Image (tube, rainbow over all chains, first blue to last red):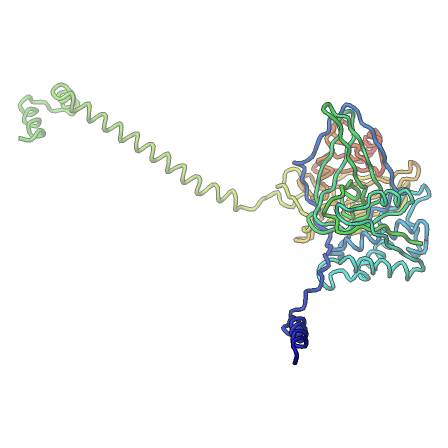
Length: 267
Length: 231
């Protein structure tokens, strides 16, 4: 064996070594989303005293979205609830999505969580997303496949368009989606939700957090610029359907804790 | 000769018989001795009183405190929410389910005295939910949602006992920081971005009213007055 062949053999052996010893690289672990617990953190509630205030933009999808939530028997069901909100939203435009039921009133306002039709929808999605099968909750791919399967089986198409992750969230694309009446799903780790109370010369922002990984639906945005006694500040929030019973709507700030975000289009 | 013997001899010599006479004679002859004895006696008294007081306190603490802690709470499970122990429930301690009955039906079938909206003839899509404890299946909260077509409002009413706190309602309780009085009852309220919410208590129950997309506090107060009419 000449020198070149010996080197080739050595390199080949080195490359094969990890496989021979069972050192395969671990498959990428998908984050699981379980629908965390609501934790109040009001100690950090903030009062903003301002000289003047300008609401720059306050835009939502038409009549926001339905406000569904997990019910008994849907342990770790945030994926199914977020998927159900998307389906309920689009049922207004594609009525066969929830057979035998319309998800809105004549005024356009979305109906509440119907105990028969919406419950059936949520449990269907819960199963399609294989909730708690591999492990607790759902992964991003399980959510996406489960929702897509439901929509296709009811005769429609669904597309996901990535809006980026974490601090690379594409805010402008999201704003365009909202203006085009398209909601988005957010896959987030432990993060804060906000209740925003506007008042004369003083706004209050109450903070509460979701303890675990969660999936929710974003359907609007709110931008406000304050002139303070010592300068200015601009706050940007997304409007979200939380999927949590009790507080079904809230404001949300984009940050590094957003694992993924997708605009969802059904047609 | 010892001091005591000297004293006895002196007493015999002087022909003193009665105890009081002896004491007087002792004070006269040995004023220092008698004074010291008195002081010792009162010091012993104080010491005894102090120890007795400490012992009494120890006995009280040892008996009364365990009794207070261990004896069953007589109010537990009764229909007087305000007088019971406060119960705080986290998300994983209860479940929310839709139920077939209305709040009014539950009230009548279970002989409860809480207020209710008599809106079943007026509204559409009435849905009732029940929050139950995972531990003992106790009903922690009843909730009803109704669409009122006349006013194009979606109204939610939630009722808990006044001593029961569910973490799902924490945001409402904290953010309702303005006060108004309706029929002599204090109503706490807030208009937040999206909803109008108010809370009040009556007869051992706490009531939450929320108007989805509502932005008028006066409408909240009208609904409170409407509820109070059913008392």
